[in-house]
Amino acid sequence: MNIPFHKTHTTEEEINAVIKAIKSGWLTMGPKTIEFEEKFKDYIGSNQAVSMNSATAALHLALKAIGIKRDDEVILPTNTFVATAEVVTYFDAVPVLCDIEESTHNIDTSKIENLITNKTKAIIPVHFAGQPCDMDEIYEIAKKYDLKVIEDAAHAIPSEYKGEKVGNLKGTDITCFSFYATKTLSTGEGGMATTNNSKYAKSMKINRLHGISKDAWDRYTSKGSWYYEIVDNGCKYNTTDLNASLGLIQLKKQDELREKRESIAQKYNNAFKDNENILIPFVKEDRITSWHLYVIKIENRDEIIEKLKEKGVGCSVHFIPVHKHPYYKEKYNFINNDYPISNSVFEKSLSLPIFPDMTDSEIEYVIKTVNEVVNENV
Image (cartoon, rainbow, N blue to C red; front, side, top):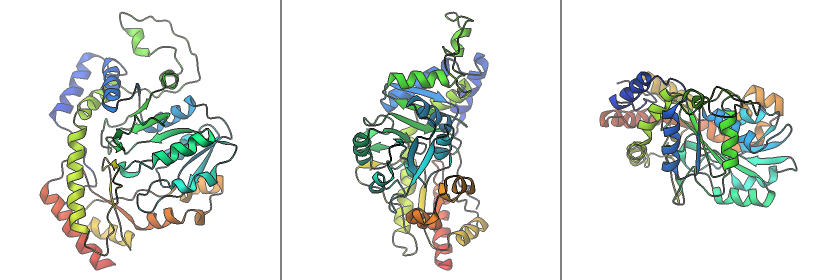
């Protein structure tokens, strides 16, 4: 049996939606994009939703909206995909890395205050695997030091923190989602920023399309005009109606797809919990995870990855910490020993397949193979 690490959930419904968008004549940002934004914000509960071509773009324009400048400092966990740190560097600002909790792999809020200086302007918590961070503690710190909060929620749709959906938490300034091919809601490539601040939303809408004073698609409708003005130094970050058409279909399935991933996670938990060589994921009681990832911790991780690959089980590692990447290590003088928990977690973490269309036989094969390979190699 050959089981990929991930397989995107797509049906004839998604295919037909894209075909319909092509036939409509709107291949770039148009009415479907606007509809996607409206339905997304309704689902999340936020006042505003701004679609973009990636979560990286959303994070970039979120930082611009809150006014990040050269030499400002932004605190974020080292256990994240590099994009979270990368967008900070776009401003010649400084990513300040924080270690993580061993249990959740989320930012360790007890270590944030020690990293704050008079140059600190924002915190970017990353909801690892879809489990929300300790947001109340983060909000308390942000309020105390007058900092902005931008959530990296690339993994976190649909996730909830204390009964509220991620994307509409009251203490957050902007939340950024990813719709990349492997994500829980996929448009191939894509992202969304949600906010309850109309000023931030306006800034992101203008800057996602070159700094143009109005959405480009408006200029080609009966209500539009050929005239436009550049009012800011923007980017080319808009999404398209093709992507949005996919997103609209996937959005209405989000709760159903999350339940399927949770069912797989529960089967894994039940199968691995008594194996002393495997540490299963820990989820705090007051939050709901999207189960974007299912990450176990084991010894001899690299060897086990190769053995699983030989037996047809796709797997991955999330993440190589930012402080270990040569560019960031050299440019910002990050010291490996400053992040002991992230280092330990990285060395032991293994992400298993957890996609909604997994069959019972595929799930059973993963369980059987992982148990056998781990027990033989630790």
